[in-house]
Structures are given as structure tokens and as C-alpha cells.
Image (tube, rainbow, N blue to C red; front, side):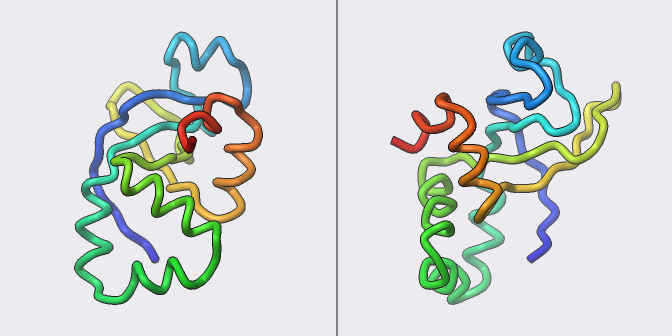
Length: 112
């Protein structure tokens, strides 16, 4: 499902290239961000039965719904950030979400 929404970046959680970049809050391609989930909740609830199908499909989607209920999502930057202030990214779900959570202890604390 492809959804294009504008949302706010809450914080920078993890940078795969270097931990110092995440501490200095420098955005690069591949950085894991914490974003607001409210625009995506609206798009998911307009399609009846979609959330029920997500829960039934697998346990991995349960993690995604748990994050949505807390008010944020994890996203990965797919474009090279410039000076214009625009980013393109992908919401982490299924295997990508589990891999990134297992890589970083800080992300594990978010789900507990």
C-alpha cells in the first residue's frame, strides 16, 4: 500500500554509518527516524477492515500497530537530504522493523 503523507520528525534514533551522526542529529541516507503517526492513522481508518487484516496476517504487523497506538512510527530515509528541508522515506514494517529493533538497544526500549 502506497501512502504519501507529510508528517513531522520527532527524533533521530539510529544512523547505520556512525553513532556520532545520530548524536549530532545529522540526517543522512539510511537514518532511522521517529515520526508522528497521526496522518497515517487517518489513511488507515478510512479503509474498512484493513487494520483487522494487518493483525490477522502476522505478528510482525502487531509491532507496527503497537507503534501506531503509541503515536509514532519508525521510518528510514531513502533520499539524500538537502537544504530544502524535504525528505523521502519508508515506514519500517515486517522484517525491516524487527531487524532494526534488534540492532539497537535504544529501539528495544521504545517497545517495552
